[in-house]
Image (cartoon, rainbow, N blue to C red; front, side, top):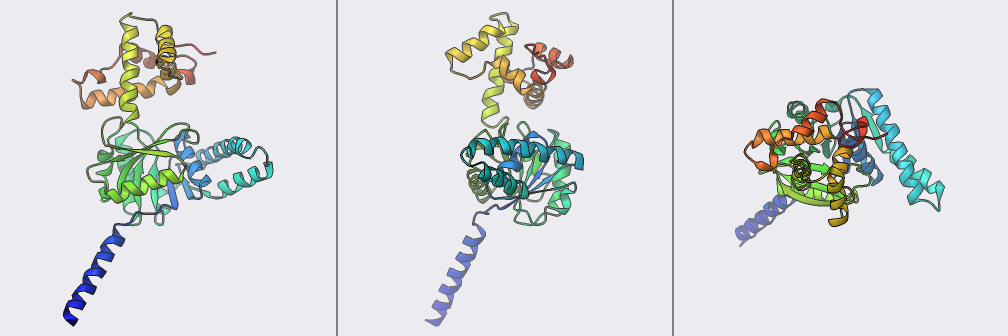
Length: 314
């Protein structure tokens, strides 16, 4: 009887250990790599929701600009959120900023973080080099995530030894305003990692959706072919860009027409995405490049940010 009891205790103990190891990671400490618009936005919303944030970029100048941008954004949020209590708004801004530290050395700050979110240039080689290096210094429990909008998460994860703790975490610009986050699962990503990232997204006040590691995930996989088809419609002379924009706003209820959106996003961004997809699957009719888009990008007419794209801006 004593033998049976010992076996039972061992069995329960073993099951408890397995259950504990499968528990979701509660993300409290976040390291964001990249101080651009996306990285700064992710850092802001994480800090504003009680997380400790380390923001990393290559130079102190970049980080100073990022911090200034975060403070300006926070003050806008505070003005609206604490309209009746300006003092509380000031305290909110100060508390959030105090939760963000900065560094130019990613490897030296990832040892105690729960999550590393990368939001750097859309270049697979650069991302692989970054994650391969950080993999050596980060804690075993640390989850790695990329904010890429166009590259395969699997290709980035393969640079590390933690494929089960690697996923896509795709935010939308501007991060403080946009509610959606796409959580991307590769064939190797563990369910524990996915659930931890879903919980983290909810803690940020976002609405997460999950998707397999397919080109463009959900939003861009539907959006970019739609934008490209609008361009082709115009290139064939079937309708003017003005009428196409008006038709989609009034007929489909979209807040912006496709050409307005192309110019807002940046024509170089759309070209980069479609060129990457075309390289992966040249026979797919949805992934075919556009002559007019290529021409505008070659002329540095990239949309609103350069003053001209499909439309001219004063």
